[in-house]
Length: 436
Image 1: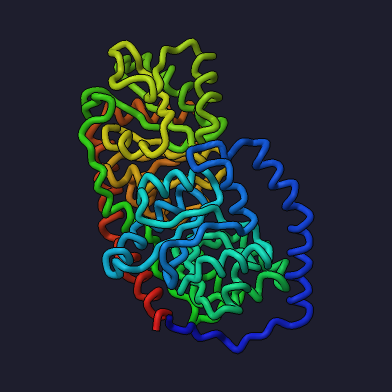
Image 2: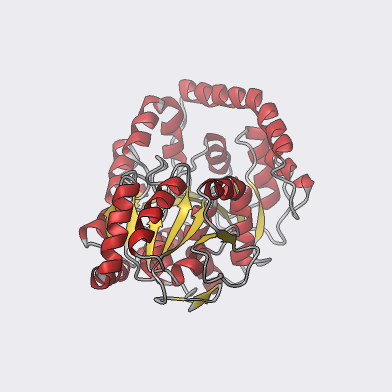
């Protein structure tokens, strides 16, 4: 097993005290978090009820040691990391891949993408003893964190054991950078113990540099999601017997409260002009499927759930996609896309997914999760910002009445993907630097 080089950094007394103070606070909170998981029933799945003990460090050993440990928070991070994981699996077929997540939806996405070819468990709570136990069982040669989750005790435990930690597709918003700056005695040691950060955009690169990360540990690779989207192979020509182009179809993907109401209000206006217009609503979280169904019922509109049908009746214009992992199948047959989390103040979800299928895209004003991607798409005319139902309906009517405009916007988004690929190779090069 190659031994990673460790920097000469030594945390001072105050920094060490801050990390232990942070750990003590977590010790007090963990019993409540553990009880909440049990009461919520988040582990009532085919994984078995025992899985909540993984949060305490009781994780299963992988079939082999000396592999890669990827941490992905939830669905978005799993999807973003998947192309790098698949590349590593192709060049190192014997390497053990372990993936940790923090949410059941992330866990389900790991199974959907990788089946039983990877080892998976929930990331333990960030306590010294739980992280030490996890690393002792897994014995990884490298830990790769996707996008945002930096845990002081995880990083410290890896640093002590000479296990390199690399952050890929790293995101650091201006807001987060300012917050981390205020807790520098806790955050700065994490930066010193990281092996490398692969920033997904110039903003993220600059913010890590501003926080004090050594320039030799920082690379602007650009966003790996560009490559993930370009390599997407799910181009099914039909979904629920829908043929693309037969009727104008909006897919409202990854929606949050109050976005379902906004698109439903918009649809009521569009139907006055285009009665054949259809819409598929895809809530971001499965626990909201029933809530969204009740919202639709309040409008007294006929709708179907994808889990109940194999095709859509001609007289039904609203579809609730209440199954995980099928959003891209819906985008594949859509005419237009609304990307959620953007009218709701969640920072906006992945606009590259609909761009893969050459769809004109609309989002709300809150796009701070992926500002570079959204800026590129907006500048080329692929993305239009909307703030309410009135603006959504006006834009839909414009695209329906002038199909050429929507087609031009869709092609522009596809070109953005093609022109910004390359982050995967740059990221893999950074990873391989720390394997010797």
